[in-house]
Length: 108
Image (cartoon, helix red, strand yellow):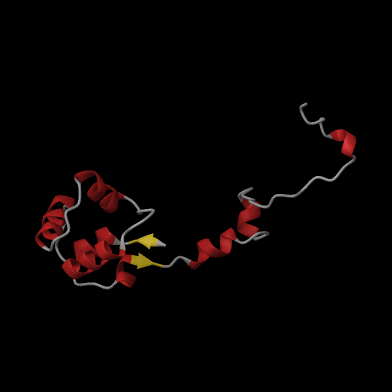
């Protein structure tokens, strides 16, 4: 997912995170300066749905305006995808089978 907060804010003439933070506080959502910085400059790993409701209300937008799907990233995560192989990005664990004597003996 692509986090589109700054674009949505800019389309409404909001150019600074402090201005949006003030507007959110007026709507009842108190956000710390650090959290606001994270929302403004990057993609949040989590966001409370209640907070998302207030952000959408203040920006007069929908959640789908803030969260934009990126299907190509989903495709790249699939095991065996060409993009994953090109990046050397494989999360597949392949078990190694061999004689039992290759393993160290358990501690006594």
